[in-house]
Image (cartoon, rainbow, N blue to C red; front, top):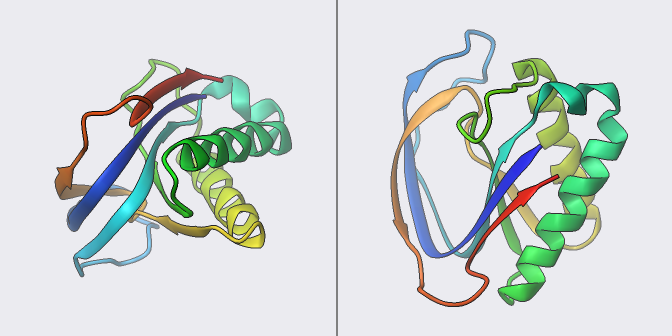
Length: 136
């Protein structure tokens, strides 16, 4: 799994093009502030053990959120960090499981619309640990 964590003062997005037929219909824009965005690419090797992948993902995004002094996390599937890709079904299940675990740990956890291209606007501060890449 590849994970790019970016702290954002603000993020706004709007779903534009649906790329996966079975994805939930989404059309409304969303906006969040004071949030850690986790750009996640599940890889083929992660499909061997979803529980281990989930644990690594949750542990790392909680660390990133703590380092940026926020309890808000946005999980975003971003299949552009590696040539190896898990199936969309696996990736969606992984994100769903991670969101539940984060909420159970008293984080505000959200997901960007899965299976869509998005128009995105972000405000990122230039400080240490506001951008961190992990190869899990």
